[in-house]
Length: 92
Image (cartoon, rainbow, N blue to C red; front, side, top):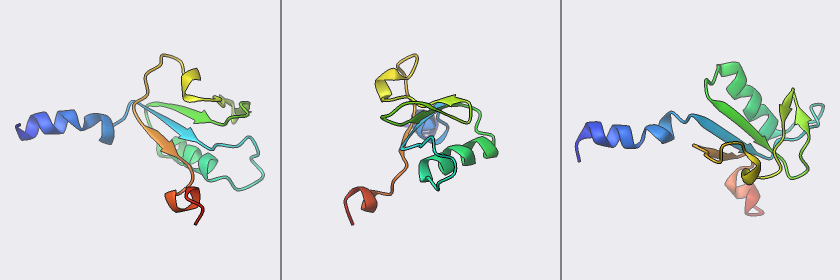
């Protein structure tokens, strides 16, 4: 495989067209890593679509909080980011 083909095949990972962020909370008055991650992407000027996720649904900063990946319109997701570090998710 040539370097050009390898680069193009990894483009979805390094330049995703959309990102879903799990663990975003509606509570903007309480620190929430998922919300901060979402805000960071917005402040950075991420050009793709952002899909915040929370099982309770709702809205945050004018954006819909999707209850699951299945609710994301179009059914195609390019990148998924869980807001909790792996060691926290593992109970450590």
